[in-house]
Length: 338
Image 1 (cartoon, rainbow, N blue to C red):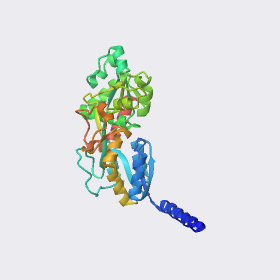
Image 2 (spheres, helix red, strand yellow):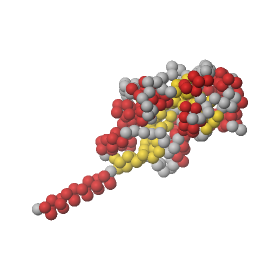
Image 3 (cartoon, rainbow, N blue to C red):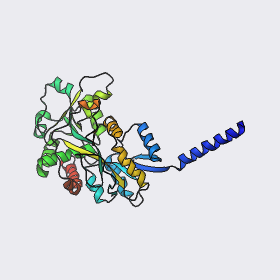
């Protein structure tokens, strides 16, 4: 009897293992900043009957390039992280299928056709409160102020050719000033000693004075001061950094999820899109990715109370970005680096 029970148990275990092994695989392509709690992802796998295979392909720009280079034999079924800077390029490359699933909740946040908005945030200038107080320096009130001698060598930005926030900040300046005036400003910033890094991490964690660098002003996010409070080893009542909302210095970034053209497991991919818009995910991404939820009905978590949403932001049109962004980045490289 005992022997028969063990045989039955072994059969059950092997059939369960076989079921897991034969579970369809949903391939998700994301950027390196994608972060959601493991229990949420496991719950999705159970409900959808799939095993998630998540590939993080570096920066969002690198991720889209991977999608374009593999379009003849897609490496993913669903993609998260294409934003309003990259949406035009993605549509032009025809790597996405339009969303034809059910409506995914009310949202004033919209993206180009085919992309379902998941979250949004603001690329803006951050400043080191202690440095500013110690030096007694008035905060700049305009982009023009930053080009004045008083602010020489104080700002660090990211290269728009290799960084999403760097590209977003460039677009904000063009959206506000127009192309010619914007590049005139960038030329003056070069003369005024603007520091350029490859990516956000180098700018924020190495060059920013709050983290031991020499620059009290950095291109970052409106949510960065809130993250400083959240991750601080000592309890803080106020963030040690602040965000500046200068005209022409704020860009609203909207990130979306989309079905990959030629992808497999369409039913599970549709469910994944809806999963990213579910209340549980919309809440979790606020401190997982330090973005605001696209669904306006989802409550803000307490940790984001220190993230002030800018009242205004600037950007060229979606079509202008799609048509001219690559050219603008090249022009920026000549104006600032060469």
